[in-house]
Length: 346
Image (cartoon, rainbow, N blue to C red; front, side):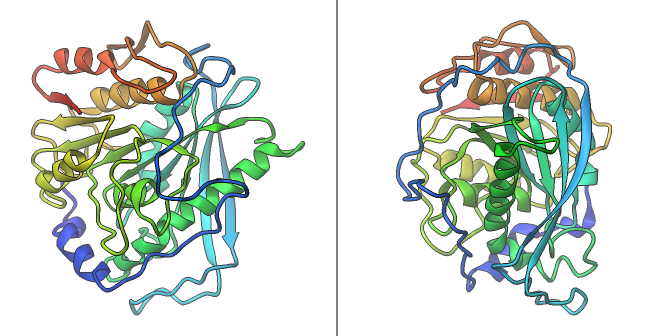
């Protein structure tokens, strides 16, 4: 379903960001934040995430407050604040020991509540999912379109949330204690959230080297300041509807074509901007769930994948450990989609 508030998003955001600057977050202690090659994707010796599917899932809400950076709206509705407040919905799969983590960025006028189905699918597959609500670009701000330029702050928001989550996981008490593997972190996002994710992967303002894999849904490279290093080697799965009127398919495809790889593009034939990813019933729902889980399994899952069934499609055949070179499960998903999905790789 096309959402009118998102029309012409790419043009509006590009205009707002052309003169902007990207916020930087404090680097991870001891981490190399240079815009060089990403660390190789490796298995960690922890239990394969495919064990015990589907998992029982608990939903939590935590509010993280970054007092080091202000909220500075350009619109007339949201109030400025000396801090950035990030209410975060967390999906926690049952089990013992650490699980991979996916941090998700919503789109313009969005929010975590619009993605409950895909987030629960990922959590039932064994992934901890954390979805913050951004201070100015969510549906909580009626002036979110005017404040779309706050995109430049959002990669640092994700880095801050990741800091907080990993600190909680390293502690001895609380529901997250011991539950997140810091070596298996992925990032994902829709639309403006996809641009946020690309910022985390490639822009010298805000690369987070802890992110080992990324899913970009109907997104493009919209942070225009600074340098974007497209050759860092972080695996990327891009999904985009070829009937997207809000952020044209050509922009998403161009971003994918700029990546040095490994990267996959899932074209949703006839798909619009948000419908296949948010909580709308669409013909692409099963393919989106199956292809993203296949990708997470291959890049963060911790063991060779095979035999899992998601949405009626078999997920398997992935090469894991070291460099990810093939996810043959994606071809099977496309083959069973009745022409609704086309998969390419580079």
